[in-house]
Amino acid sequence: MRILYFAWVRQKVGRAEEEVAPPPEVVDVAGLVEWLAAQSPGHADAFANRRTIRCAVNQEFARPDQPVRQGDEVAFFPPVTGG
Amino acid sequence: MRILYFAWVRQKVGRAEEEVAPPPEVVDVAGLVEWLAAQSPGHADAFANRRTIRCAVNQEFARPDQPVRQGDEVAFFPPVTGG
Amino acid sequence: MATVRVQQAVFDLGAESAALAAGRHDIGGMASFVGLCRADDGLAAMTLEHYPGMTERAIEAIAAEAEARWPLTGCTIIHRVGRLPPGEQIVLVLTASAHRAAALESCAFLIDWLKTRAPFWKREEFADGQERWVEAKAEDDAAAERWARG
Amino acid sequence: MATVRVQQAVFDLGAESAALAAGRHDIGGMASFVGLCRADDGLAAMTLEHYPGMTERAIEAIAAEAEARWPLTGCTIIHRVGRLPPGEQIVLVLTASAHRAAALESCAFLIDWLKTRAPFWKREEFADGQERWVEAKAEDDAAAERWARG
Image 1 (tube, chains in turn blue, yellow, purple, orange):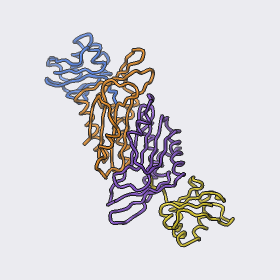
Image 2 (tube, chains in turn orange, green, red, purple):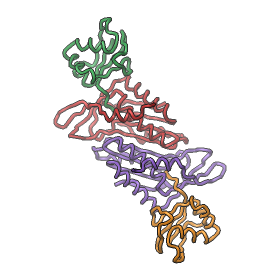
Image 3 (tube, chains in turn red, brown, orange, green):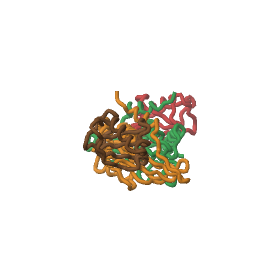
Image 4 (cartoon, helix red, strand yellow):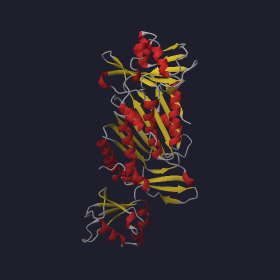
């Protein structure tokens, strides 16, 4: 599973992307966040306030209950501020 | 008093402008319209339907009860269609 | 203070926009509207007549109203007159503000008010030689009316 | 079908507008919005980060929604990325339609939705060396929300 980070989420995690292989019990975005947050202090910091993080699965905005599976591209980022 | 005509009002009257000297009892736009309508068949035709004519006195939109006096510039035209 | 021009010549949206923004760092958004001549029903050309003198005054009054309602950093209004074939530009409204809502709303306001308060008249010529004066539209009055206050 | 571009290079409002109108005689109005970088509070520059791939898809989806809601003859959306000093253009939204209301409303809709649905993030650099990520604004959510249906 390919994970992408943007803006301050990227800065806190300390990388722009990583390949991960979460255990089988990680089935949705919420579970993936729990698992990622335990990977390093940087990850923990990035995901400290879940409500300020947005997610996209395969380049579509996703909610916490969106399923994730092997091969997905999952991105985490702050609320968008373009325009 | 200088009278200007625009668009189909100009075409019906048959001229773009004229100098007129209405009698003293012409004191407002409504009175001026009555007096002008009697000046020629073209004037009568132009002013046949009073509701489709708009007026400006000294380059400001004016209602029928707006006073007019010697030296004024008074224009008659259809509802505007610019933009 | 708005820039107002009534002219036969074509205008250049890019140049007018650049002029309004030149040297400024306080503009967050610029909105524009360009009205064009459509080739509906075999239209061959449109001729725009206006009331020289009053036209400029009326447009300046409309622009002053927009500047009173929204915090604009600039405003340009150009209206063409004369004979215009289909595809030609007719009118430009350009507004700039620190905030996008002010730029967008004032631009919509200006074109709605221009349509009902500036002394221009359009005559249409058709391919078959017919001519007719465009009649004012109730929908334009309604569009202008929605900006009424109180 | 909308034209969507995400690029570092500056864009040319006049050229984009001319391209959208070229050879057409069915456009009655074109509306544009250009967002610019303001020099508020000692801002030295803004850097725009985005999500390549998703950005284009998201903007195309937003443009498709506008084309479903309004009868547009054309639509161009260009969003810049990278480092932009004050005064620089950030985003262009350009819409064309037979009727002015469709052009104006869809233009406002597109910029409101872009602000809340396209994956861009702004980082601000200040003259004193401080940096900060711009926070999403509740007023932008409210502006986008007013276009919700039903």
